[in-house]
Length: 501
Image 1 (tube, rainbow, N blue to C red):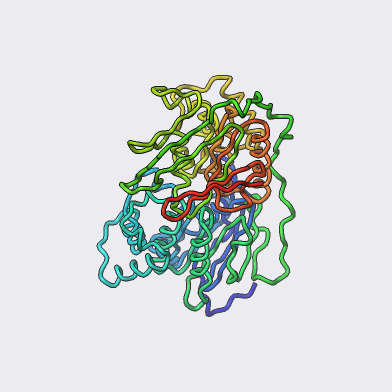
Image 2: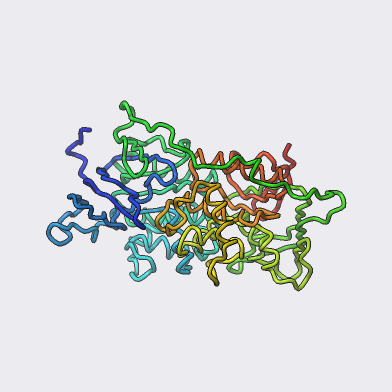
């Protein structure tokens, strides 16, 4: 591949490998990013895309394997002789991804939106440097450009998942980076937010930064992509300009998912006409950061019903699921009733009947000792384990790990697997007690197309076998066929129920 002398190298890897938890996740990788290049990084869950982006920025360092490997940054002489360091270059290589977003939750960095974007000027995690007038004006322009002006005084952790993603993209651009490293940045974004981000990435090459974008949805790729790299099993198998004859990867082996109908027993048939609703909400108002998110909601989850919850980023979808689960509660004057949970019952009794998957839950489990521990914790509706796992715990976890083809990852730490693999482990956690109700907040985030279809089929089969489903999603393709009602959350907090045939 010819390189123009007018396009300087921004970062370059030569024969780099990365070993985590004794497993080689990147193997003998060479890659070069030059100014004005726009790369699409394509590969299945666990292929190594996220780890490659971390190596490029210097958040991880190659593992010595007895052969020479080198990493060059903007200033290869920034470190000791023979060991170039990323110091002084990270600000020019801005990274945005789900793990960075989750770090705010794990460390309780609850800055205002303006403060978060301002930290991008100086590549700081918390605001330590006071911006000058010119820098403050740049932050203001970015807040308006990404439709964040009305949110500028809001606390970051009170925002929806998609709103947080927009804030972090604005933060990345604040420092005027030479390149953006974007890891599945379209996940969790509604149509308006996706359009804003795509417009930012489709600037002409002379005005905008270079970038690398990893994604599972080909439709998300901006039209300005100039290069494509395919990653499989920790190796770059093809890389080059768009339009050249590419060595596209053959279909990767799918996760070993069992035959669903033989592994999920049907629940006892309930007389839907006679049974009380599973959940009934009356006059509920929910406030976050002293701001109303849910307003005067009246909603009933009847026996046998399956719902999708739709709405813009920040409309209250995640808040509704957290209220049903029991992590949030209606303000005085509203109520929520759960079948079989009389007043005064500890909420843990309810949580053991419910499976819950959310981006926030994924962040909370990041410090787990292993993927197996995450799955076992579903039996206790806990984050982490207070006691050593029993034989029954391990058997249940092994069943669901095998079901999703995760048994080889059982002993790995969350930080040593891909974000999609970790999301899959959370779905296994949610199913470990075969729940009566499954609450799913963007459950397919981070899953490649193959796993998406497998897991969607599984969840639909659960619905057919008696588990009730309430799922918050942005994309129609993420709604399981068994969903028969849609709760549409409209601007201003109003709701509309749509029957789905």
